[in-house]
Length: 188
Image (cartoon, rainbow, N blue to C red):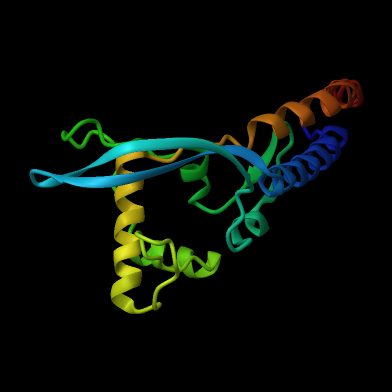
């Protein structure tokens, strides 16, 4: 059975949801920022007096992920498609559990290098917080420390689909029900 009316509504709902997801990612949200000094303990490193504070920021680095969000609809379903690393944003990264490595691995250093360049993040001197020369060894040290922090504390998840899905269903629920009724009546 072809659902002509329903398919039109599903396409409209998918477009609405894709726009809502893009706006959700571009809006500033409260996130946790962690600052800590580190000390060498045995073979590894441990944070000393970590300070957690709330900051407001969006989830856009280069804009490629936001641009990749496309509406998808079939006769009776709708949703969005996006780049593979969107699941990393939705699910976050688990921290290592003690020293048993039960959490996620770190981020590949070449990906972290590209990200820091996109965001314009430069190495700083830890003692006086001044920028230092942007040499390869300084960048590698900065990336190592960022990766160590990600491994230890993880990255909190952000489900960027949850609220857009709720808004879309609230807006289109009655339209979907009516279109399915019309399609069933026309098919009989």
